[in-house]
Amino acid sequence: MNNIEKYSSVTFESIKNFGPHGREFWYARELQEVLEYTEWRNFEEVIKKAMKACFESDILVTDHFVGVNKMVKIGSEAEREIKDFKLSRYACYLIVQNGDPSKKIIALGQTYFAVMTRTQEKTQESLDILEEKARISIRKQLAEHNKSLAVTAKSAGVQEGLDFAVFQNKGYEGLYGGLDAQGIHNKKKLKKSQKILDYMGSTELAANLFRATQTEEKIKRENIYGKEKANRAHYDIGAKVRLTIKEMGGTMPESLETPNKSIQQIERQQNKISAPESEEE
Image 1: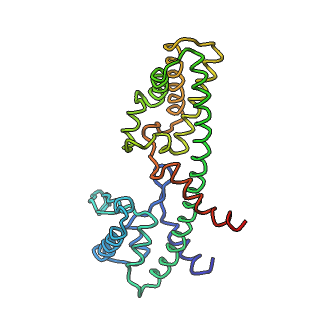
Image 2: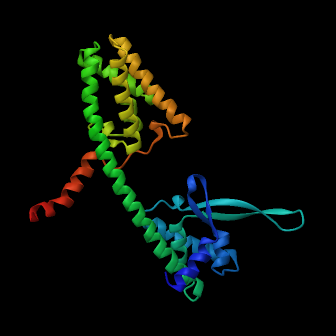
Image 3: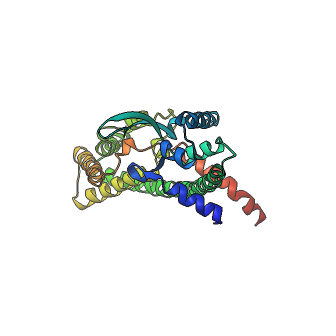
């Protein structure tokens, strides 16, 4: 890091704040001072230009510019309300890009936020790749364990196809607070041909994998026999997994974000990337 980047890093990092879950943000009023804008109305015009640039890039403005009101002291006891914004790193980047280029601090800000925004993007790209790999791996494990669970359930008296559908739904209902497979499908707003397991993130898939493996173990360990008893066992295990998630402060599975890409889409993309290498070999 050169002296310019080092200076701008210290300057802009010193006014960084952290919200819930460690999410970083900057207050516009504090950024205004650092960027040497004496009048809020002038700086607000720069913010409006940045918001327009965000909108024209098809990025949700409210994800990066959050309006807030703050109380500030104007005397020994008096206070008044002022307008402010909570800004993401990307919002700050857009602001300095639209700021007064004659100001040296604006140039420093452009360097700092450009470098740090790209660094953040690279980090996110790496995390996305790891998440996709985890989804594929856990989905494959779950497919195998669902087959094994089906065999175990059959030996416990769940013989017919419809019976197994009911059995499977009981596990979902326990884990998802009453939602069956169709309910989960509707919650995720999937098309009729799209399968719920193919549109789960790694955390949600892992919860379902644990539900499946523990149900199979319970049926075997307790020598459970009979459709109703098997259904109850599956529901109870799902409910206990849900309770564990709650006790750990985790997000309930039905509230987890639904990935934009299916497992099959990820696999196709990976196959396209690896295909040229395979041809050379």
